[in-house]
Length: 563
Image (tube, rainbow, N blue to C red; front, top):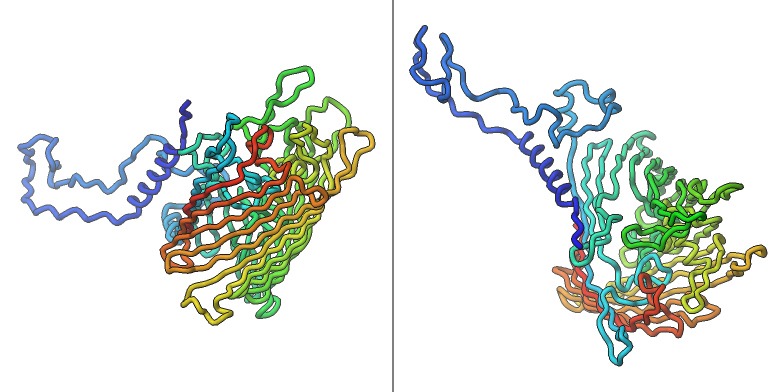
C-alpha cells in the first residue's frame, strides 16, 4: 500500500524559503523615469481613477510603491519563529539585523553511496539450482552485526548546509540510509538528522589557541581507523563510540609548542526520546515482536538514556595523534515494567586510547578499548560502539546471541569486552620508483580482536559462563592500471569464536573501479564476493531468525561520490 511522504512538502517549503530570501536580497531595477507633464491647477482628470496615473490637486503621485507588499496578515511561511528567548536576546532594529545577515556565508557538503546488492544462493522452494536474492542473504549483511566487514554496504545519502560567520556556524544535516524509491518507506528514517550551532573563540588563549562549543542535536565519532580520522575504516565501526544526543560539547585547542598541539574535549547529552514501548495489554505486559515500522522495539522498554564523554589528544604537526578516551551511557530504567522493588540502573562505560600516524606514503592506526556494561537492555542508542547501537545490540553481539539451532538465548545482560583494532595502508608505487607512470599500487591490512567475558549468574539457570575470543582480519590490494580504472581484490577471514570455528567464514572479493580521474571522489565499483562458509554460519539480519541458508556468492554494483 502506498504510504504518503511529507518529504516533498518539506523540500518545497525549504526551496521556497531560499527563493524568497534570494529575491529579497537581490537588487531591484529602478523604474524608468516618467516624462514630465504640465500640471493644471484645479482641474480634474478626464480619465477614471483606474488608469496608470492618479492626479491630486497640484501634484502627481506615481503608482510605484516604496513600502514592501504584505503577503499575510499573520506570519508568512518563510518567517522564522525562534521563540521568546530569541526575542529578548535578538537584534534591536532592522538595520542591525541587516548588518548581521551580511556577515554570514553559506556552503553545502554532501555524499551519495547507492549500491545494488544481489545474493546468489539456494532456491527457496528447496528444488535444485540457484536463484537471485535482493536483499542478499549473506553473512554479516548489516554494520550492526559483529560479522560485518563492509563487502555489501547499505545505501546512504547526506547533505550538510552550513551558515557561518568567523565566530559561529549553524549546521543542518539531512541524511538517510534508506533510499526507499526502489524499496519501501519507513517512518524511522525521514532524513532530518542533526541541527546544531558551533561557537568559536579562536583567540581565547591569545596566539596559543582557543575554544569551541557545539550545542544542539548532533553526533560525534571517536575511534575511527581510517586515514586522518576521516572514515570509520574497513569495518565501519567506532572503537570508543558514536554519540547520538541533544546536548553540548566543549573543546579546548592549545599549542604546547609550535609543533605540538593539545586538544581536550568534554560533552554531555541525552536522547530526546526513545522508541515507544507498545504492550500486549496482558496482566503481565510484554512487548510484541520487533516490527519494520517501529525498529528498535524489544522485549522490555528503553529507559531515558544519557551520555557523557571526555577525550584528550596530543597532535604532533599534522601526521601523529595520540589520544585517550572515556565515554559512558546510562539510564535509570525509568520505563520498566517491574511493578515494585529495587530497579537496577543500566550502564555502559568505554575507555582506552589510540594512535594515528598519517604520512604521504602510509597510514597506520592502532587502538585499544575496554567496555564494561551492566543491565544493558534499557539503554537506547545514545552511545553506539563496536557494531552495537543499543544496549540490547551489544548484549547480542558479545554476551550471547540467540542460537538458531537450539533456540536458546543466554540471559547474560552485562560483562566486559576488550578490543584491539588496527589498520595499515601503504602506497607501494612511489617506493619502487613509480614504474606505473604516475599510477598507483596500494595495499592495506586490517583487523579486530575482541575478548568478551560475562560470568554465569548462579541464581539464573538461563545464564551462561561466556568467555569468547573473537577475531577478524583481512587484506586489500588495488592497482590503478589505467587512467580511469583500477582493479583490486579483498581477502577477509571472520571467526566469531576462536574456540569453535563452525560459524566462521572466509570471503574473496575481486572488484573493478571506474572514475573520471585518479584519486577522484566519484567512483563506480563492480564487486563479486565468494564466501567459504562454516557448518553453522548463518545469514545476517533480517534472515538470521529464520531458517534460510546463507548465500555463498554476492554481486555489488555501487556508485558513490562526495562533494
